[in-house]
Image (cartoon, rainbow, N blue to C red; front, side, top):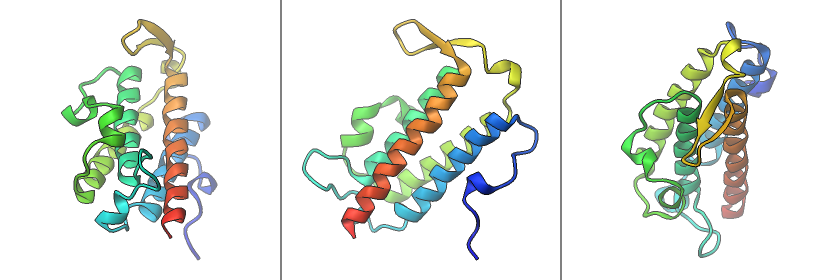
Length: 165
């Protein structure tokens, strides 16, 4: 019998039920990428359903980079140089090896899961600056958006993979 989906697993120890749900959402994104993206050939990884649309590899890069950027709003920290390149490079930039993209994803996901596991309930309501416009948002909203955004793009990867066959 296959492992249950992350949302069917027990609560993550040491965190609130809400934070546990976010962690399960991140684990689900990771499981989707392993199932639908990381077993592709290089050609399939960078295939575009149509000119101008995002390849699976670009979506993986975007999930990785945007998740780290959102985490850096919630908890200020230095970003790796590649995460500073931004959305356009992630989605439309030149292909690179699938191995490099997957390695960065795994490293970023370990960093995200560690940060989420270290969350204290009292940290969630604190408002923090977001982006360069001087806007502020509660840390909980940023972290919730991080998980939702990653899930959104994981769904695009699943759909693209099904189109690929």
